[in-house]
Length: 462
Image 1 (tube, rainbow, N blue to C red):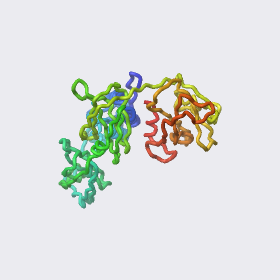
Image 2 (tube, rainbow, N blue to C red; image 1 turned 45 degrees about the vertical axis):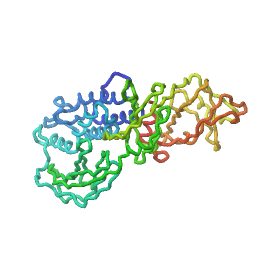
Image 3 (cartoon, helix red, strand yellow; image 1 turned 135 degrees about the vertical axis):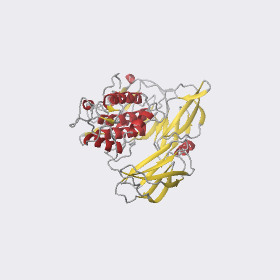
Image 4 (tube, helix red, strand yellow; image 1 turned 180 degrees about the vertical axis):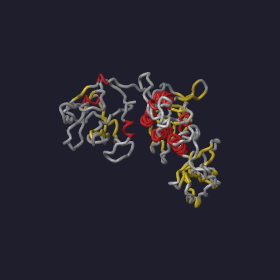
């Protein structure tokens, strides 16, 4: 990330391995560099192993035609590898902001990677068809039967359409086609193994018409079944009504449907509202996030809620004063040992290991006595008088099942932070003030000892 090099991704499955991680890192940190580097690396990959004519990726840079050919002298594609790229692009589009400059480019590549293209590309590579021909394997021009027993369950900004499949043996998939209020035509599909479709992206509660088609392996579609849906209120409105913009640019609200939403923050500059480039992206039920790094002068802000389909709430206008923040220099920190403090479990761990800059290796941790079952505490001196706005506590990844696991073992679960400028020499809590009481929660809500990619991403320093 910190080098000018961009030649890292030269094999197809590498795109699946890394691209979604970069959009996740952007989502967690809000740092634009992850999206910039993602596009730079993606363009390099396309330049060396993407075949524009076939709209397929070669296995890696060593398999590019005509330097490499199949046993019958044709282009040699790896269907599974193209599947990895397809899956990677799907994950990227899920987390990529809709206002990203390169959204349409990623979407275009994704749309070219659908299942039929993969199947037809495989047929080209391993049959005697002409190289430029990509056609269905079957030629049945008789349309399949329609879906039947259709029912609708309306949801927040969406609707689930359930149906019975026709009995055609060459049925391939069911698709729904509909338009959003902004005129954008949407299309969703499910294979013949499914019996429902989720149509989403609605910004209103009006009735909408959805056309449902059956499609066979020859890409012949049935006559449409017209389905009426009437979605419930889009989640952006509930979040908008609950949103509280507080001093310091802290935002609190509720998102009971856990919808993927953006809180867009604009600031008044030279008579017009412009983006602060510090949007908040969240799917949390309880929203409690802050925008930082802005000028500490009192300013006028405009806040609006947006979903992935560019549906916007009304705008909340307010005047707020961002908080001043700066990282305290750890060079002034020092351990203070008071009579009632809990000693370390090992001689090579220590209180000062909490701020030594190493957040992953043993024994760079503070580990108090594991046999002490009552509340225990340690003390350290910041080296200066300061007003604390937040504190970061890094989890130590315990070794478990040949891997590393956060939120496990001796990591903090429930804890308090106390402060004083005059600690009693006897180790009592006289003169101390409780600054906060906290509970460490796994973002994934997974079971104890279960690790997820979301947890791993949140443990990475921004």
